[in-house]
Length: 221
Image 1 (tube, one colour):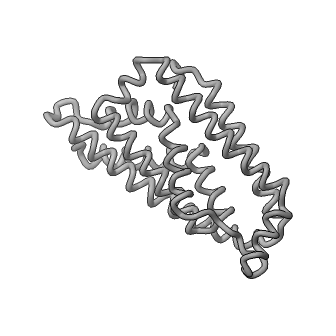
Image 2 (cartoon, rainbow, N blue to C red):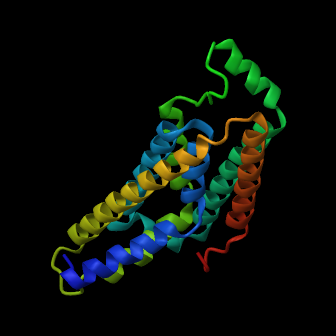
C-alpha cells in the first residue's frame, strides 16, 4: 500500500473528483429530488456498485483491453449515451405530464405533495447501469489508480483492489452526504410546478451529458 502521505493525497484527489459535476453527481441529486433520500441513497449505492466493477476491471486488466480496442470503447460509449438520453427523455415526459403524476398520487390516497418514487431496486439499477455504461469511468480507474500504486510493490493487484475499495467507500460517504443535502431541498418542492421545472432541467442536463459522451473521442477519454 502507499504511504500515509500518498494516501492523504489520494483521498484529496478522490474528494475533488467526487465534487466535480458529472453524471454520478447529477443522477444522485436528481433521484433524491424526485423520490427523496431513500431513492437518492439507492441510486448512490448503484453508482458505487458500478465503481466496484470498474475497479475490479482495472485491477485485472479488463479496462486496459477496453483502451486498446476503440471499437469496444465506442460500443460502450454509445450505449451509455443512449441510456443517459433515455433517462433525460423520461424526465422531460414527467415535466410535460404533471396531471398524470398528480392523478397517480391521488389514487394512492397519499398526502398532498407526496412524491411517489420507483422501488429502491429500480433506483439502484439506474445508478449501476449509468455508471457501468460510462467507458470514461473505466479508463479513469485505469489511469488514476496506478499513480498511487508503489512501483516496487510486489503485489500490485492487491494495491489496486485496496485503493479501489478506498475510492468506493469515500465516494459512498460523499454521495450519501449529498443525498441528505438534496433531501432538504426536496422538501421545498411541494408544488407541481416546482417538480415540473426540476424534472425538465434534469432531463435537459442528462441529454446534454449524453451528447457530450457520444461526441467524446477514445483518445481523449
